[in-house]
Image (cartoon, rainbow over all chains, first blue to last red; front, side, top):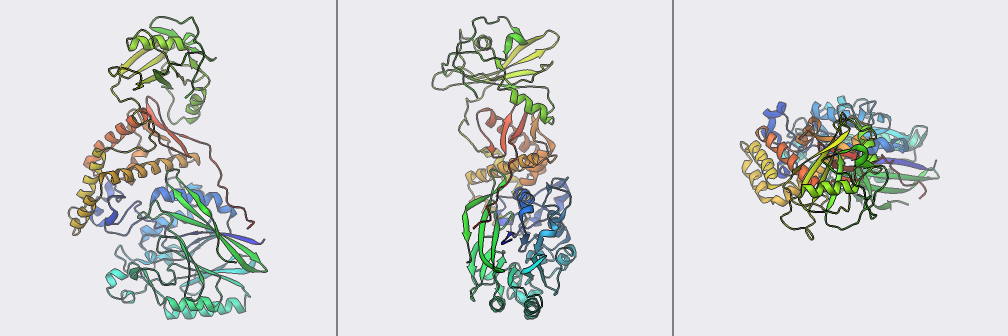
Length: 332
Length: 300
């Protein structure tokens, strides 16, 4: 079959508390309130934004409806608002609650029985140890151990089609490991920055060599939460991004899927590799500007010949994701 | 709404009560369109709001049974104390089997261009007495403005509702170290912006509930019953809007009243999912059939 179809989603920001916003937009979308959470009400307003429950429900319905036609569902990071177990649990519930068709019996959105098609990458929020972005929480590895199957510590890969090892997709985790890695002032920078670590680059290089030499893989798609290029604000940069961009060039990576900045775009690294950045799927502080992206890959002579991208935006009036504009041909 | 343009039957029943057969006829009646009064009739039935097959059937039948025009004309003339009145629209919704307690409500609205200003809009209803085999009519006058929201597609809350929301948020942050920053942020937003944000949030919440219902989830599509929101919808509202507990009763009561007024005066809340409809007893979501998502063909 000469085509593969991926659904690219990102920055869902699932959380114990839906509809929580940061204080600057508090008026627009205030934190959820229930009697059991009264004690947390003051400081919660300053915690990171969570997700819009209405957009999340529309996302779940969309995924459940189209999943049979998809080769893969790629989530490029920030599944949860923080790496706290409660928040990661909400994200895990969305991705893996079984026997449902868009929502579970308690009314929470879930894409249900499509775990086998999921491919995920952690984002900076997923590694927060607390609501103040203390880095490198290991909870993500525990919560998603059945989905985030790392073969190289902070790298995982799989083939888009199990029977056909022509297209390999890799997720690389460049989240901060320590406060000092964020750069001064770390109290601020640790919220949004990532860093390309040299040991990760070494492991990535080794793995890519193996895949090329042993598996004879011809096409590579990388998933990196932080776009490996200039253009992000200083507080949201991937530090040392040139190291990974040059490696993408070396192995002729077809394209990089990323998220992080909550707005969709297509750009290139300084070495010419295409970066397809997803908008947020359901983050509360961006609602109603929530996006998901359908990527159709055309395969010719075992190589990805072209990519067609179709954008879907959350239509709050109709409660569904609807196509916006015409499809874009990215690579040919 | 359906318009009729034929002559009404000559033999109109008289008196204060009417039998079912006198009052209803399965065939179309004829009337002269004068454009002076617009009336709609709706089912005020006994159906359990959760019993969707019954409700849907009733609404479907609303297009098959029509009130005898001359009967309603006479009743209306009595109520509003004028010699004659012409209707350009009557639409009765009723189930096939009429039971005790079934009723028909009729709302009459001003046509501001043709009616005198002192004419008060009225709402009246007929309830069926299965022992007597008759409809008994009674009515009440309502002091609402005629179809104020006839062209509106968005429910916009009042300043009062917004003030409850803002006061709630302010209360939550008043002890914060950054309270001044947030107060400034709140003050910089106009009430109109807040109203639009509120409106979008409410609409998207209703859309979510409707779509859940369409997918077969056990989420009630009844938003309100017997004058107040149902519990599930209240939970949804408080998930979306952070309302201080001491304001919650006022918020729910005020929002319910405003939503009901909005719908009864011609306002619309609708989408691909269906529309919000109001009966005398409840506010319901009437959903459209589910449509499959069609992805682009793989032939580029």
